[in-house]
Length: 174
Image 1 (cartoon, helix red, strand yellow):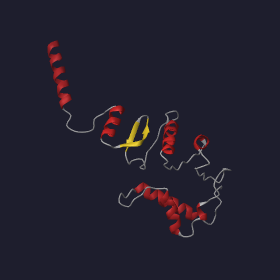
Image 2 (spheres, rainbow, N blue to C red):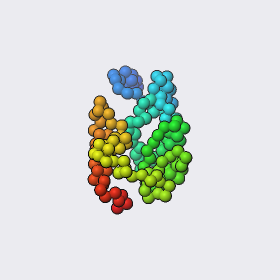
Image 3 (spheres, one colour):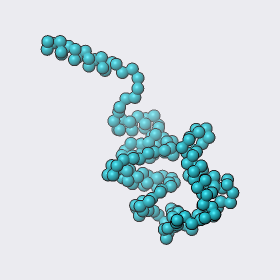
Image 4 (cartoon, rainbow, N blue to C red):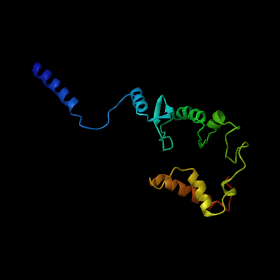
């Protein structure tokens, strides 16, 4: 009885190992970083030592998690890298955390009419026709017609229409 259990257990392990036909393999982050670097697909932007895939930096990245899971820490790691490489970022900072830590009045522009250090600009100052609203909205998006990205295209549309809606009533404090 014991011999048969040992025999079938050993045979089962051999079968399981050989049973993989296709699909992704799980690799550690160090191995993945090495693979990306050797394939020349490693981005200059890294999270926890792991580079993003090259040219994916401008695609959507979802950072999600409950309180205390490290979302802010991840952004605190990302923003200095953006500054180091002289790249640009649009940051929506509802709490002021990133303004306090990263805002540099010598090179950054703050667009918040409720903030005393803000640029004196509103989108309506530069928009006279419907196409102008679309141009501003498209500058916030990475939509390209070739990819036909539903979410990017509709994000542009929502922003453009919202700007048009409030063009006559420029009181954004309401």
